[in-house]
Length: 226
Image (cartoon, rainbow, N blue to C red; front, side, top):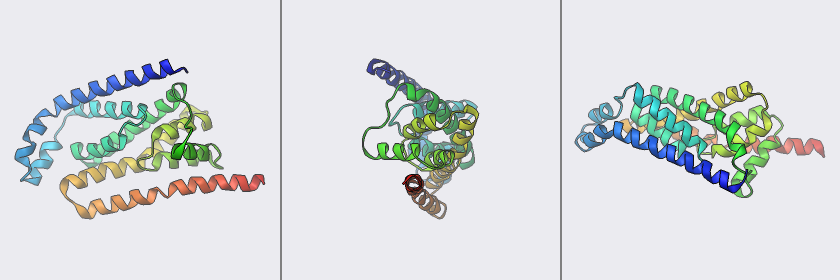
């Protein structure tokens, strides 16, 4: 895929994202206008943010899906914001659906528009995933690690997983944990519930250890080959 087509793809997705942000901003305008008045009353603040209808849920889910297609987009921030805006359980379902659909489509489309990583952490993770002993487990772990660029995982998934129904299942399984952490973390932050927020932060930090698991599984292959 040449640079011109990749550029057109990025521009198209960026325009869609901007359009969805404008729609969501318009739908949320009353909440933002009331934000200043609600700051002194936490329950009022919660009620102000977490009172939305089906259209808001669909629009926000669509934004999450499209942002996953755009490399470098702050998907984690949007997923956390979902917890603030919709409450933990609703945001959890929204995040799982958005991440699953977004990653599944991206894994089938992005490889046609973007080259493989050539430097830094992304290249190392991509190489580890391609050479991992258990590819399906590696893809699930890749999607599970918070704040990891999903583009890298999607590029590897396209190379490793050939059956689409299997890829869809892996995307869903890998999305459950981060979707839970983002949704409950955002909701706990809005409510000022430090007891609920602290475990979320700790678990999120521990999940970064999965990068080491992926690397170790690759080393085992190398050892067997030698």
